[in-house]
Length: 451
Ligand code: ADP
Image (cartoon, rainbow, N blue to C red; front, top):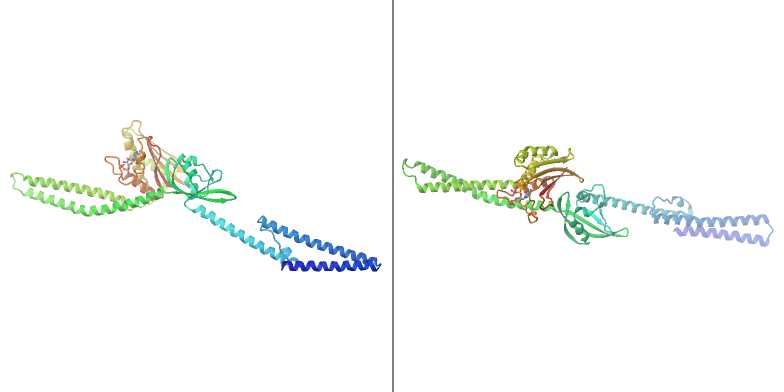
């Protein structure tokens, strides 16, 4: 169709040129009509110019069209061409191609925006390893994980040598558990890699998922249901034992009181009374113990409010400062910035800090130059880190995983409930609690809570 009109146009032009040439030749050979000959010559020249102009116009428009495709320039328009009869079909065809290009481009842009929004919102941190071994942060979750809100560059050396080598050795298709050191805490992440080509370069896409919190939540759930079941069974059997032993003791005491005055005290009754007394006391003690532990599994609810961290710290000092001073423990607290606020349930935060500070006090007991430090800091990712550090003996590597397990304790009078509660309170607020990696140099517990 396009070529039909153009060819018809060209054929007609050529035909008229030939006619004009034939007339000119005839006039030259057979006549001396000079004026007519000059006019015919001018006509031939005009027709030739018109043909050359027509050919160069098509070439120019085709070149412009191909350039527009090559440079993805969808702003070019060919409507001028389609207004001229011989080029109408060519102009219309070029216009249709440009419309398709425009549509394709806007679809690509839309898809790009959609992918960018998805990338920004996936909760998994994504980073890419370039061909030259450099790492770049790809999404908001990655920037939050590494506390680098305003950059795309990542220097893995800053997060521990183990993390760096683990990341470098991660091959496409592989998964492994890595530990990274962040603000004095160790965080467990599940890393998975896949490779892709982008702009002629081979890159590796790496996803990092913080599984510390997930593990804790699952462990807590498992412990909760176990404790709930045991507590239920034990309480069912223990309650009648406790009340029956009380009743039996009272009965024996009444019988003993009814014995004739001045007579010999009944030895067997006396022994029975003591035995029943012991049973009653023990079962009462056991009931308390079970009830206490059942508290752990009861659903805690947080009533978060904007809380000024310095106020919480001041409360801790008022509460535990005198006891620390009496035991010769130096207590220091700092908050950066002083106006640091976070949205938490203040009572629960108090409870968590009391547990951590009490542990620290027990850890430094009897140490010379015992020191405990309580500090708060705003993290770049919009979180707040609260640290409780002591210069006690620290925690042995083999115990690090166990200390958060409910009822795990190394103390004679310990319950093993303190850290479990701290973890429960942290996860209730969408945060976490981790132990710093400083064996032999005391212990540092870090509570990370959303601001
Ligand atoms: P409890 O204090 O009753 O033992 P926790 O859950 O609070 O229970 O602590 C569990 C264990 O973690 C402790 O028995 C102790 O071994 C260890 N631990 C906790 N905090 C510290 C600390 N600051 N320094 C050394 N060990 C600690």
